[in-house]
Length: 610
Image (cartoon, rainbow, N blue to C red; front, top):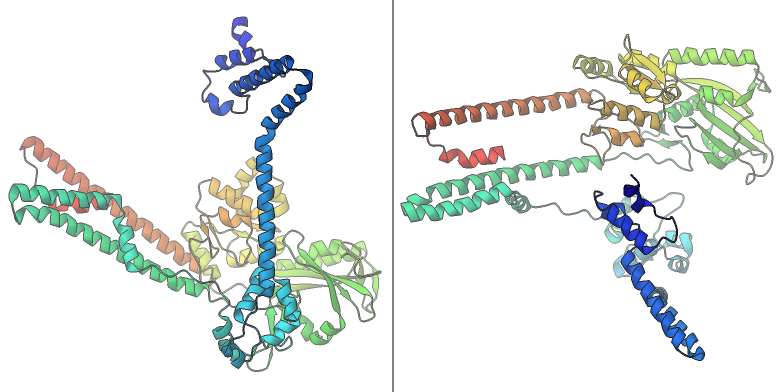
């Protein structure tokens, strides 16, 4: 054993070259030593450097003392001259880059854009190229030269109060262009033909066709000898044309689908608010925003609130938007009296914990007792059991300037508890029952209260007997073994985070299941990319255009039909090929001749089995 280990005794520092060479020879039997020991010292370079140093030392000892400093200087200069050369090149390139940037800036500042007659006739005072250069190059000089934002708005005839008139849109698009990226031109039919010809099987068949024509003419003469070759060429031509036509037709369909995807209804919400009012065609107020914000907004209007007056009197200072982790949103506003007040709304149980006061019948803020907390919790649970989404609204008055005040987390005064009904869409319950009958397990993952989620799931038929309803924090606290036991039984997950959804999807896929995710949110989190079918517009295998859960039934129906047809086709191919193989083999063994003439079918068989 000592004999085997003697070569492995290597000092961690200042190891001799001989010891390192012995160690290298001892580990030569290791698999892939170059990769495993790529970070160790290069003995050849080390030996060359030591020889060079010894030669210089010997030279220094032989020369007079006055010349030693020159030799030492030349030595160190020779070692660092490569680094110095690289540094000089980098510095030179940096100076050239700075000079070029300054020259370009001066040129852009000195260049004058001439306004064309067409632009002047349309009533605009800035050239399209100049406007594009300001936006593209973030040119502050060009912006200041044209009078800043106000000057640009005046030159393009835009009003900050009224915006752009609809009648001027076509003229603006004609002069300044459409505000969209240049689309890639569609591929022609000949491009698909060329792509189909790149298939290796077809190339081999075409070569075989040429060989067959040459051999056939040489052996059987003209024109009989070229029949087989022409048959192969005709088969290749048919396959190429059918493939190209099919792909071209699909590209046209995808192009139409892309146009449908770009037809997006946009609701513009101003000044960081989640809801806004506008006038419809009949002059009536129309509320824009999320369903929750619209319900709260309409409730405030029914109570006699004046939104426009409130917006003018209260100035927004800070906004803390809603997110799926905090499950609340807050805003800091300045009252007409100059004081600051923070408003908060969000998940009822979370906002309730932040409150230590409550408004009484007279509108005064009084301390919140334990009995009142229990009573409010019972009200919240009662709303949740009726499939109502519960929210708490609270406020807190603050002292000090807005720049120094932050939105508080505690000490709020509870104003009210509201329950919002989210009605189930027609046909969802029937679609869920159809999915369950087809062997598809439907699970609901939501951020709502557990009681609200269970009530909605029972109404839709998702939560059945034996199913489990669980909350996100409880699911996160489980170990992998516990998750593996409970995931097949989970039908409802409430108060979940995006990470909980990702974990659930990842585990479902890990257990060999096919996952289909459907979400009504634009940002569905990281779990979107864990699905086999991702309903996200740019990374989706299936796009549901009507945003309806009932469409999933049709998707599953069509998918299973395609799968069954593939099975039938494979079964047909196996049956025909096996029977033909057995007959030909038996006929060749018994009679010495092949049953029938299979040459006309060889090209098609090769293509179909490729």
